[in-house]
Length: 264
Image (cartoon, rainbow, N blue to C red; front, side, top):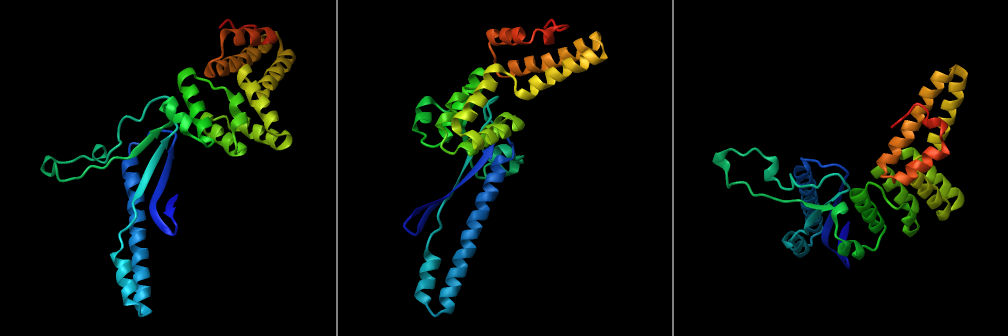
């Protein structure tokens, strides 16, 4: 994004989004910024050349004397498992012979770790990014998030797609987007919130039911095996979202047949 004052560009702000730590990030960032500075040089030279060809020597001289605007890059880190502690500078990426020690200037990148932002900084955010930050912090601290706050999103589909990318539940949130288009904000909030409170989606329930039907056809032993696998999938999802023992007990009460043959 350009930061402008009237028609004057004061700064170019670049944003790089990362869900994982990239050890080459300093080199990547500085290569992007170098390309932006190179573009400024080319555009300046072309403008000065055009002014000179039109006989305006004074304008050409003024264009060439003008300084360039700075380029700043922010690396937005969405990770929740570990902090971005290493490879924030150019020297960390280089194997420098002792003979060159002190001759290479270091440069550092600006990494913003959303899941570790303080509550004070979170409160200063005015856009949907505040919801994303709160969700990431909840995932980092508790392993699950309160999706009822989806009501706060201004750009609803974009917000859901961010969640889709962060959680990996593509199918779940694609269905949520369809429900939003059909029934609006409340419809999808109830849908997503209900899924995460229960710990399994309609596909899991369907799979359990199919497992039971197939088991009946193939015999009691096969039924128990299939049902157990279906139950295990639901239980695994429970654990991933940090479900309470009460939620798990409710799941076992609602689907007692699926718990046969599974003592975990």
